[in-house]
Image (tube, rainbow, N blue to C red; front, side):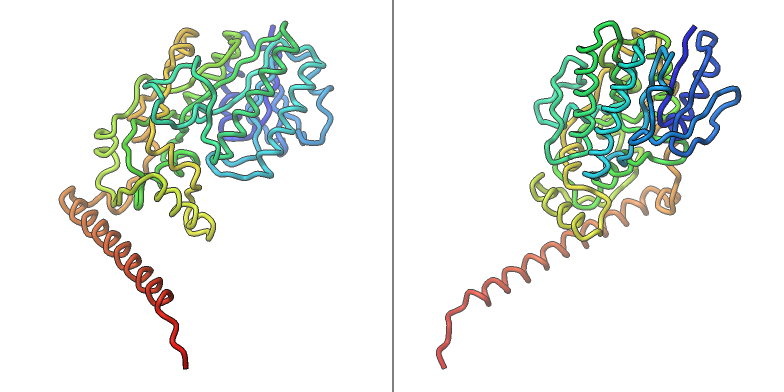
Length: 353
């Protein structure tokens, strides 16, 4: 008999997890917790609770498993206040789980905690060190939540702690927020490098969470489909896109300026994740019997809503992409010339009158 409490139960991931748990024969009671308190499945109790301030001990009392999915931060978007709130909520959830002697805690993290580095192996296994790129605070915050969970596990050795690290998540006809930011960073002025990529359908992530609960996973597990999409295959899927390749530091500088003035959804810290590989192995989840229903390619295809460019003939798209790329190069060159002229004018000799 298993009683499961799910935080963030009204969200896109949480609602799917609750519905799948409700279908499992060995899960006898589910408590869906969220700030909005929206019913997510039949015969599932729902409570409206503010995890940052509301009472949690009574909610977790008698629970066998706590699945912590709630998050105030937007995936892939640096939000210091929201990231600090996530840490505070994680502490409160873990403290309440300890007081209730919960047998297992499942925490959702991200494969981005490995960081995007030139020396990364392909693929990365769970034994790799946590090294998120320091200027990408969203990934740093996920690593901090993981550390809180690991410390809680060391204080509660009788309990299992499962930490799931999914890759970029997509849904039907829509790239997830993180996948959308990564995609935007790969087009236009982009950093040198063409790493392989992975896409995880949200339904497969929900399935992985349920497998972690029913298999009483203890430890870290990556969540991704088998394999990855090589650069050439990704280019074929995306079609011709205008790209101006520049060194990584230039791409970060441009992204920082555009982010600062609110003209781009791409935070500068995400740029390395588009130039270095961070694809992961899924062996530990497979050992639990989990399999992704969608391959990386299938996840990309179902998440992609064709636009006007996709409906053009291939040759026409190539021609248009070439024109846009040339215009971008010309624009950069003109801008450089104007800057040089301004500097020369400003450094001319002083004339006495």
